[in-house]
Length: 471
Image 1 (cartoon, rainbow, N blue to C red):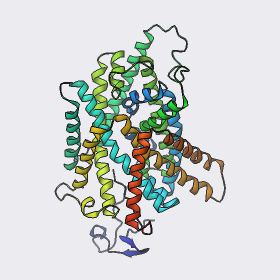
Image 2 (image 1 turned 45 degrees about the vertical axis):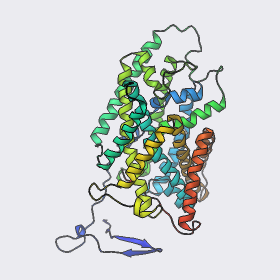
Image 3 (image 1 turned 45 degrees about the horizontal axis):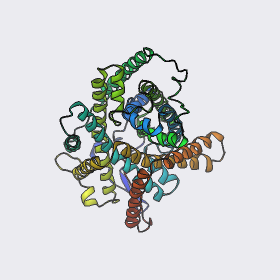
Image 4 (image 1 turned 180 degrees about the vertical axis):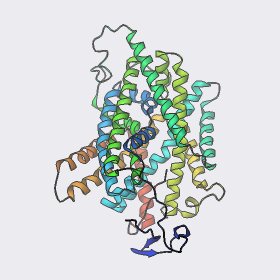
């Protein structure tokens, strides 16, 4: 039975109906259902989307940072982070069942816990959106400098901040075909790297029986503080898996497939990342300094086979540029949603450029933040601050799932208790083990958000919302 679509909006709790758009009026003057999203995405479609959103080479970009922070225990950190993301992925999938069109952490928290906590979660998510293009520009500038050392690195940082800003002002968007081609190319590069590194490792003499197990555990360098500090950064390898929940309205059998696709994405990315960093740690043992920490994996690949310096470097650079452009616009659109809903001054943040139909003010503002931040923030610190906000969002989703499916459920089931509780406390432990500078800067950002929320809502006595940027 078809449902009639009627336009309307809520004002002070009352639904005010308006006339349907002209496109809904048929030739006989009757009402017709407006076009709706079609449920065409299969489980495989959702899984491929999740893998592309996270990136098959995500762990390569942060390998050097992880290796130094974890004293060589990168594989173990990646696997622990995978467990945390699997548990959180289960919570995301379950919440997507309850709110199939919301698809956002702050919506889940606002609905299940409290609107003010939802707002705080949203402010933490804004930190992720803002810092994602920042660290992409830093990495791309570092790699470009490695390719062309005659150009100062500060010039490359200015260049990438300008490119991200200019492309997004022009409203240029990458096509699905381009994304699929990039995913296939990255998969091919991963395969080549693994084959080359395995060939290199097998060709070296190994008299020490512990050589192949040291990437998992090395008693000479192991410490729990270093491991959990490394794991708190390794979460970055999985950032983006939650984007699958935004496709709930277009998925076939979303109650089953959204949850499965989210969990499978974490498993696939975890497996790929573990293999990538395991062979890299064998090629470049812990304790040996990298020429450049931020682009360490490129140097590792080159040690295994010299031509891979250019291949891997170019692949990771293109991946970071594509991610930087996309997340730059995502941050601008989130600011636009906040301005339009009056969470931020509407005149500046809620305006749209009439020519290109993009939030031009916000695009330029994010560009300025990317440029300024890249001059003062390292890639490692930027990644940790990004994870500060992400882990807050993950804890919020786990708490929301616990309340909805266990506390408020008529029947208390262990499967509704264990995943969200474990997911919450593992994410809390990872958040706690972020570096002191990351926690300090992250706390400052959150304090500004809370102060702004209190001011705009008179102590959270009136509603204050965020809007999710659409893909």
